[in-house]
Length: 330
Image 1 (cartoon, rainbow, N blue to C red):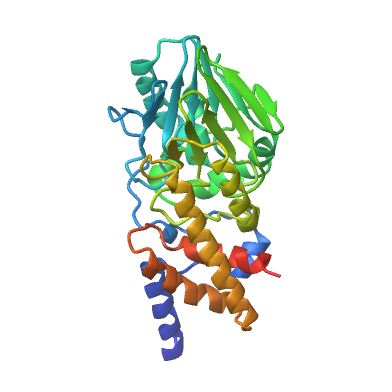
Image 2: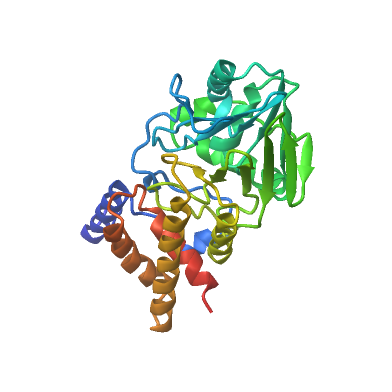
């Protein structure tokens, strides 16, 4: 028979889980860097389906299938030249990839097709399984290393979350790249030049930034997101380098930002992300200098930054940012 104290403990744990604040312990975070976030980090979980008939034109050569602010759906880019087309990210699994192909057919008749991904997470990459066999897949070497080392485990963990995710990822296998690059690659799509750039770890080790030169459009992946709390998914995310990369993104002088998630915006989105991350970093250093533990800092700052950014979604990620900056603080 369960004692009164045991019942209290389990009741408390159940309540915390419902509130979405039962996160991973710091010990687990360090032990298993491949572990994906608990479902409670995302406030709502409708089926992550790419939107059909919602594609928007954001510049002369660039179209975006917006995420609709649905968790685990990325903003998907279609960059159309006179000779070839580049798709940026493809949603989760072949069902979403097929939707992307239908939207692609509405804006491009090019037979030459390139595909790249902002990073290796399943909701950005695995839709490519539906793409035609002649699609040329290009990504950074650092991203491919994460695909090889982490993606099978991420796919498995995502599949355990909900029946919808399991169905979307059924029988998905990583598609090998045709072209790998170390720091930068350029694609001439015909009348439009696209730069693919790796700057080091931020959200992931292999974050890939896609800049459409003539149109001034920058795809940032999850290094910049709009009104979602930035995601530190595992121990390879780097807060310190993330801030450095945001400064480097300014040097592209983009006119339009397509964030990994959230509405398309202008270059000010970079500054908004920087302000938040710098504030978390500063407060973590203050608390650590006062002798606060990582766990104490996480509890205090999760409340503080949720209050400061009341319109941002998925506040469960605040704690992961705090833990990462705490580990990096001298």
